[in-house]
Image 1 (cartoon, rainbow, N blue to C red):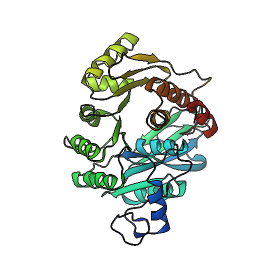
Image 2: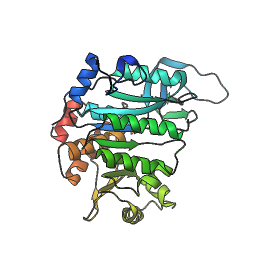
Image 3: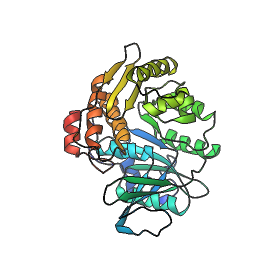
Image 4: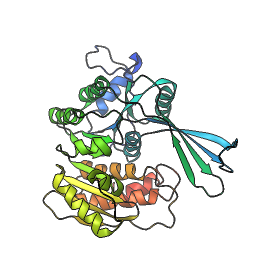
Length: 349
């Protein structure tokens, strides 16, 4: 069944939110979490947190001082955070493992607490969480994004995050490895494989570059990538033809040790292959106007997991429904640009 509501915020570095199983006395938050944890849940892994500010400008010229119009909006970014956000939005309990650092990182933690994202599993790094500035042209709504430097994750910090997930996870839970992971090391994929085997977790992969190259070769339930990531992984130029996309996908499917492989291509048909079956092309529904595709892939992942792994909807049907939810979301400037009622109607919750 789907959980209606949100998980309590769990801050491991604070006694108030400590969820150590060895504690004899537990707060109301801990007791509430213990009850909710009996429900299957999604653990998302965000290796590259983002402290993002968004502002509108009347012009965008180099060499000039340009002042923002109206208030500057702040939000916490990072693919895993967005997937956890989307899961909670759909009524699926989620826990977001993050790495934070410095003032910007603490600001992200406080914002996630106020947002009631769900359960947050933080590990602190040295340095400063990367910041981003999204500049929106007030006349055309065209966005230009500036991103700060990434912080590599040391091995012992990576281990600490997996250990915290291990203490909280139960058999049948989902681990979704999402987005980039600065400082990725060859042994990280094996550590994730061992965690999933030990706790009997279902692994979903939505990453790129070095992490994808390693993770795609370990056993997983789902690998979701996009067209650009597909050709980048294969080290090939994209000829921008349907035949080339299909050929590249088939070659990747021979390498991937996954039950379900999916590759999206924006508003164009995606490709889905379930182990032992033929690949199928699935066309997203048309929308009147795309305003922002930011977060659509994250909503697509969460919706597919909610359908297939929580509701046992067959993969093709689940992906078709998830594509429709993500497409509608692209017609809004918001990260989740669809109402909960409309999403649940499409997903038949």
